[in-house]
Length: 184
Image 1 (cartoon, rainbow, N blue to C red):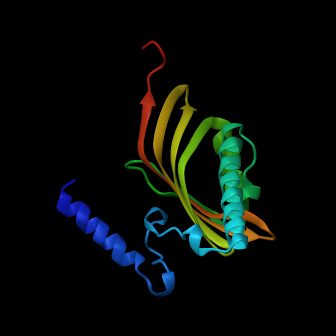
Image 2 (image 1 turned 90 degrees about the horizontal axis):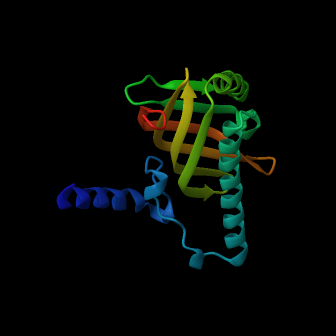
């Protein structure tokens, strides 16, 4: 990437972030948004921010563990949630609603064992809503063949009755390929 292109991207990000009153443009990715400095928060605000982020981290980790062990995930989503996935060159797969997400995942993961590894998490909390982005390495087996994919999740959350839940989980794989068996 050229220095000019990097400068243009940085300038565009800075302009998008420079919203009056500290507001952030909705179309600015979470990882480009200003993170509220703790120095500007009261102790109570700091504790709430850390607690919210930790609960969201736990929700994301619980999702990964349940997928890995083929356990139910529907209770991690709001009833109006949307889950999408796209593989390179593939069609966008979209599932709407908590019950549809449950049914789809139960069938899919029974046939395609998967082990997601989620990392490099960035979380932005705004009251009872939040957004996050993270990276995902996914190992799975389909029809006796091993596959590896990686990409990003873009998530939205809402606090419902004191509990953080996914309102949207968008998986965009940047790579998806068959992995040869060991020793071959």
